[in-house]
Length: 127
Image (cartoon, rainbow, N blue to C red; front, side, top):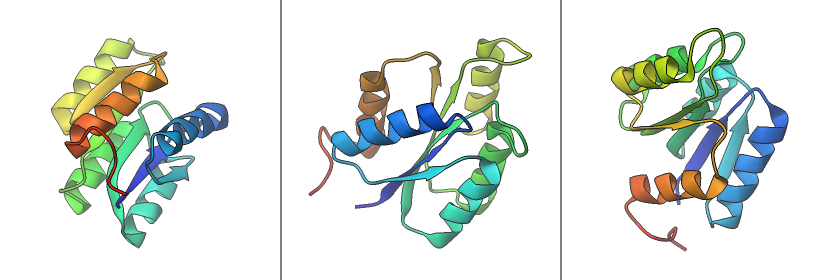
């Protein structure tokens, strides 16, 4: 089974998302920023990226552009709680830049798991 790369600069949220996806049967790889995410992607075995948008250093919008350029077949879910600009702006831009799905923070972890299942095209992960 391919792994899900989870990218967020908030360690508590990063841990909660990884835990929820692991409990749903998925293997996860955490990354604290866009640069680390690209390193994990280069190692291979990533089937999906779930990324925050507003992060220091390489933000999620830059990450989406790099993933589309270097790892075009890997789908992405972008999530945002806003920042200096409204959440809707970030999510619309992420969708138009290549994110398959977007999710506004705060969200229910069950909603994220549902999106992951939808993108994998199965109700439960492969054993």
